[in-house]
Length: 361
Image (cartoon, rainbow, N blue to C red):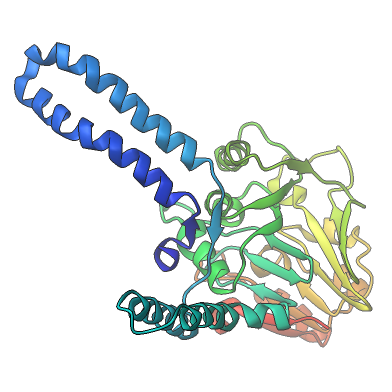
């Protein structure tokens, strides 16, 4: 269950025991009612309450918390097999209870120790094709910026690409998810993430009421009880020596262009700085006042209308990451690559390198 679904229901056993009692009566009575057809009305006076009771059990236990799980690797498999074998030998009377307890504790230590010894501290630019998805992992703060999407396709990037990647990285919950702006290739996958993982808060910029993709995300947040926060310049969250600060939008004046309304944030870890700009165009970039940057997440997949000279002169980034896939837009544009080269900024691309992991100081 843990390996297949990425989570284990803590009340699965009692839920099935209760449901099993109801099903023991409902299945044969329901089958009999199906055979009797129209004359089964008296029998259905019993089947109706039984079916309602079964649904009530599912709804009640379905609201209970679950234990999230990552991808089970060789170490986890070894730990499980060892503990299961010890338990089996104990049932056969060939192993003492202390040995079983020791095997279980050893398996728990084997699977949990890496996360305890050294919590992850990095930025992961997930390869979601022509889209954006960035994970910030810091001690005490885990943030997902966008979750990709598939324009003109029903492929669930969030559920089938982003969520498995997060679980493989050992992400059990997200403190903040940022939906930068109402573009499918940025936020369509957010709904799948909200369904799969506990999320502390959802950040958005403009709350559009006529965009179906953003509406789906907001509806999912409401269903999951995730608070939605409309952020503005200066909003921030801090964890230890790291701080995440909103650079854009500046206030309540909105453009008719979604890209102009992108939520842009800066990450500061001590004297190390990075900025993530969504799809902001060059004029908005120039107004950000990012300050010097060690790392720039280039806006709009390397569009010629972003990563302008004013931003590069202001930020002087040492490195830049472009999240891009196969596309017909010409991303990244040669002009952008030329500007980055002229500013002596090293460039990294997800279409060439796949997922890029950037360690933090």
